[in-house]
Image (tube, rainbow, N blue to C red; front, side):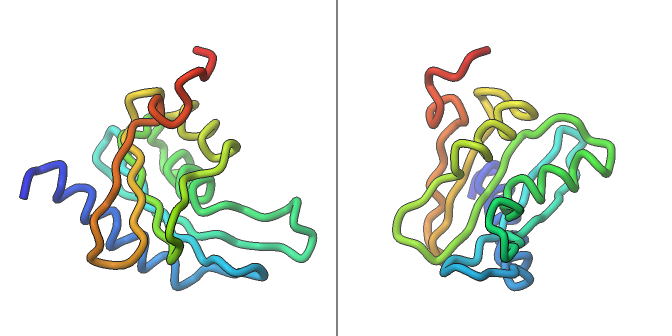
Length: 130
């Protein structure tokens, strides 16, 4: 297992734990873990609100925790959910691009122990204005 694989696996495990705390009104609980440039790890889960425009997505929850802890640079993010196909939404990708840039690694895992699909934020948003 490479060092990158170990980092992604550690993030995925933390994201699955965070996912257990998700407050969902819809159908999908989401967990997320991020690695900052200082080496710290922060987690988030989706927190849904009866007025759906107030929902907090797992990705922005984790990035917010990273920022609150004083780290300003996102290196990698892993999002987990029991869904066949998913990626962060456009709004979450805006946050990922803001704090991680186009080279930030973005991983997705559909179930614990499954392979982690990894792209860069730039792969997901190739025409993002820089």
